[in-house]
Length: 427
Image (cartoon, rainbow, N blue to C red; front, top):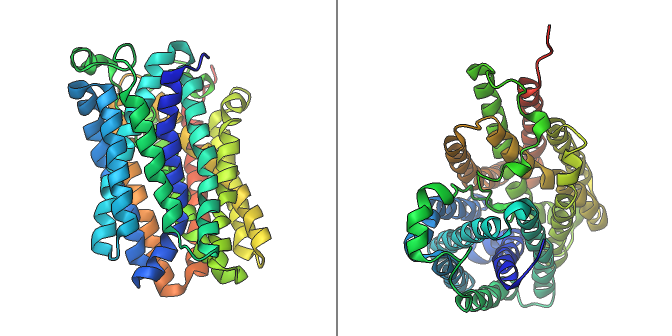
């Protein structure tokens, strides 16, 4: 794969988004303390992010078609910068929530346009380029929690670390604005002509959750859908395939929920369990991001040797193992180990579950993608809020019992879905 100026500029969008997600999400409990709000109210920032992500899934392809890819990337990044500025200046929930919605809209538009551009620009190497872009974004994002923790430890608070996003986004927007129009950097006229066929429908990743960091997956990219989990016979009964699709859709929801729950609330859990200071507790989230980033560079080759549905199910078990270490930890060091293990599991879940979901609907991928968009947005919006509300009622330690329950559900539906799409023996 040849990486040129256009490739690195697109990568800049993933870097900016990864930095924001992994510096802000672990800072949410600190924001709640500053604003004097409950954990449930703080969890509404995840809901605001979901609103922006769902809106972006409708806006992104239309903006690329009408204004061109370069304009879409620049507009998305400028919205991120404006939203982050409003967020770090916010002194009330009434300001911070709209700010998060605006920056989530911009971030997902920029990621959507960039990922489609990478796929078009690199052709046969599209899957490698997109995977590398996500890995680069989450790897740079690894520094985000460390920066936030350091800023808190020296008395600056979390805001300067998150504000770094503004510099990254504006620098990337400037670089994108200087790229010539043509090829993958489609002009408006070309985009309008090709929009019905060439512009993929995209799935926002939060990531996080989604962050988030996992990015948007074009439906045309079949390379990530492992052939071992595709039905052998083209005339497989529709009900069997439809049930498998619902199973993998549930796995998508579980994956996004787990990543967002962990990045939002593990800081509070570490503070409560280990008596660590706010700075150290915030920085421990870097362990989770490290696990997510590292495993994403391995999951592609590994899925060629292990049945993807089984690998997906195993990843949920790994997440439960990481949760067990984290939940019982009495020192910040042990908590980091648990977060790294949990990250190994969570890093596998989104890319494999979305690939398996799309593989169940080779003739109706747009419909499958639309369901994943809606379900993913709801998971981002609902999961952090619900855990925050539960933490208000019973404490964050007890509330974190939700995590293994969600992971267990994800593992079960992955196994069931894998059975449904497994080749049927000839009798």
